[in-house]
Length: 437
Image 1 (spheres, rainbow, N blue to C red):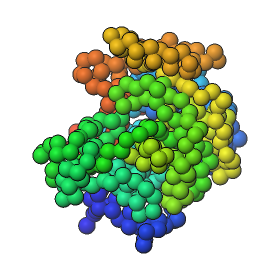
Image 2 (image 1 turned 60 degrees about the vertical axis):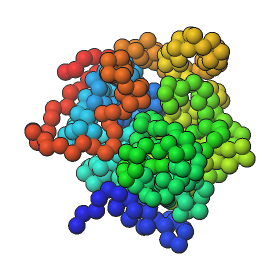
Image 3 (image 1 turned 90 degrees about the vertical axis):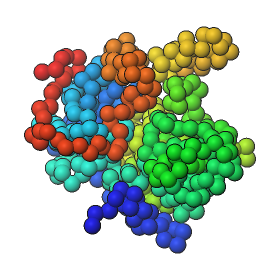
Image 4 (image 1 turned 120 degrees about the vertical axis):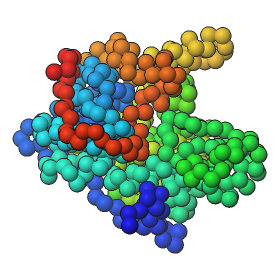
């Protein structure tokens, strides 16, 4: 009998942890790229976010031919001269099999050497591992591992069984959840959420009755202190690249202006210990609260790229991705502050009647470098707003947050619906500055 997703997660936890120690055995990440006498062709599976643009520019500067696939016909990377071609795909959330078929078609037509997921779509893309031609490598963890780390409850279970400190966390269906919620401030959030969606801060005895019994929701002890995030690139449990950073300006729970943090060695040590005990190979990102004693408390794991990519050396990260087995340590950029200035400016305007907050945001904005602007690739900066229309229209007309609007169609898990047409959809090719053909 097939396991349910949560049974599979529990199986993975048991498989990787025994007697309080996590097993070091992990499937190999096959990412050494053979160029076959030509430039390496890399397919990014999302193009709408600034972190995708950062990757595209770094890979193009390293001599790669960069392709982008996205469910949106118009997206940020389409405006970039670092991108050779763009492709519109179905939504992986609502049409997963058609989405995967489209990616396979692109791989075959364009002789793709390396597939590089960018955001939440990584969980869908990882399902391609056993369907790719021998020449094509997928830069992602196996789907089972991605699911387990993406699940906020099973991630905490793995950390605790590895002997790492983590906040007390229970399923809302667990009897211990009611006890925890009655004894202290807690956080109620979905196991599989992202971008802070459906997150609620609770005071003691304020747990909604409807939340009890829901195994898809967790109750976590609320930690207080400094909020920081990390991004690391790991290979066989060794950290090749690491950055700790904190948000200065937020839209909802998503930071749009952020600065590197170099004074929290215990955070970096926690990440190194977690990566080593699981022998992970891929990008790992974490959100932490660092309390007054300097103790880092992990809140969740994002087994994918985050905005931390903006702090890493483009040359180093491109080299590490395309020659993973031969990669050495990846350095950081000298600048310590970066921002998405369009969105940061909106936060300045939005706090017009709160002048102290607006002034604080303005100071942060003026001290940070924009992640979109480049003299060598100027078009994405002025075209950010019109090319973000697929996201903006959801924010304006449907009241969704920017984070939800940007990830709704790539969210995991996929919708389980009966497909009316099982035929493979046509993939529309889009030139970097042209229109759909």
